[in-house]
Length: 360
Image (tube, rainbow, N blue to C red):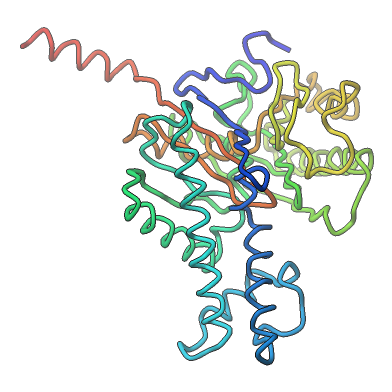
């Protein structure tokens, strides 16, 4: 691996990753766990248990963790007198308070100092229920006098963890290529896709697009670590075959977004507890495992880079964060991912300021 492009890179050409995978502890464990999608399902189940003591549960007999986002959104959209909608509104309000409290704690951390905008990503905010939570959390933060703007990720939730890799792939690797293949590994799902760069249409890569994507809900299958890695390799191979048939010029590169704190050598120091098997073992190195299975892409030696999934998802928003200096991302999924960033001054901006100073 080129020493100038280590795994888990913090210094990028246009932005610095100030911090990620913060694990703040409270009296009941990590405070981020209180604002995860898992926590919302548990909270909703408590609301339903209270309702069952008084009568029938309007959401039926299925456990809250098994209800689909669509089912919850449909219940939320029912008439104002709907008992299911009333119960959901109560759970949403309580969860929004938890999210606001967690954000307030993050904003007190040195790496989050001066954060002006937080992008909310992960699968949760892509639903009507998630959107209500974000809107209410923003109102609660305003009432708490916490000066920060909340925004939802502007891409499809399943695309963010793939698109961010266009800002992490070493530029020399893109010469003569117009797309990359990327993986986004979460505690519940794995996504693998082809990302077209479209640099001619937008040099800032704001037009990059996922042109093909496969999603596997591995939590349903409960695979071992080895089976999961074998399946990852199969998913990448499928994208390579598709690219070959479609004439897409893939770079010899695999971007791997993964939970946890990623060392420069590509190992994981902590934070991968939601993945099957031991991913923090000194004897395990995912990038090497994938390169072993896929030594070449389009006849060129494969390079695999790994970074934290929240960082990658945050970077997918980089072109749209140029109106602020400090910003962050929270990904509400199986757990709560987090990352904070500082935009670097662009050369053009520096030049303009210098000229303005001389004129004055």
